[in-house]
Image 1 (cartoon, rainbow, N blue to C red):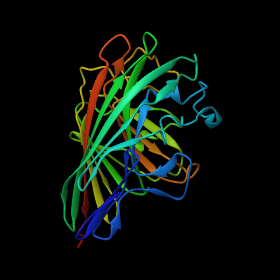
Image 2 (cartoon, rainbow, N blue to C red):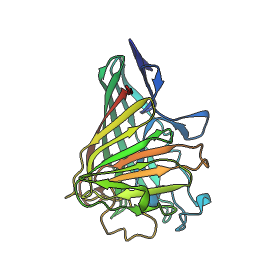
Image 3 (cartoon, rainbow, N blue to C red):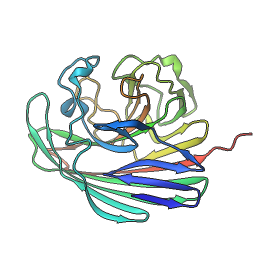
Image 4 (cartoon, rainbow, N blue to C red):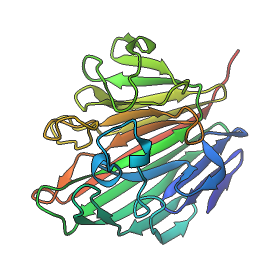
Length: 287
């Protein structure tokens, strides 16, 4: 479905925002030849990645990493399809790649168009995640992934001293410029890397600026809550990451990702979590 207005449009499909166009400029990365899961846009994955995606403890062995079909593309059902509001549901069964256990999940996803004109568009995605049957101790998070073109400048608001940890090849700390309550990095994607930022560091707001557009994202971060996604080899009992940033060196098609996780739900604890993400895309006016 495509929502249009004077000066722009927004495409929604299968539980995701595929693309936003404003002022004649498309905001998100999309595959030129879509194949399998990697089609682009603003999508939902499920964490922790180590449980559903990885069959190896070596983050450099990409043959040990797969995207489960139950997660992406998944089987989404359209509940509502009207201008400015779409609702989707899905009920994936996840298979733990290490111990073979299964976890039942129920997802409801609302996409709302909040504002639109020829220079700015804003939308909100509300994701409700509920855990059904699952083995004792199993954790789960809503993992939102926005694919963007490389070369832009990323700014991250900070709630505490800047710190990150690596998931793949180490990212040079010198690439970051750190100021008062904000850090900046240009996402060149010359090497494949991914960083994670814990919830006591990420303040819940980021901005990605390209030559034509500015993309802003705002989420609620709960430092007092449990987050469950960690790099391979990290202690899974420790606090996980709320924000992640990925750069692809061309292996998957060449893009960057702005990612965040909801707090975790657990088989022996809270069974439902609601994540709300607000995104705005604005045309840049340069002298």
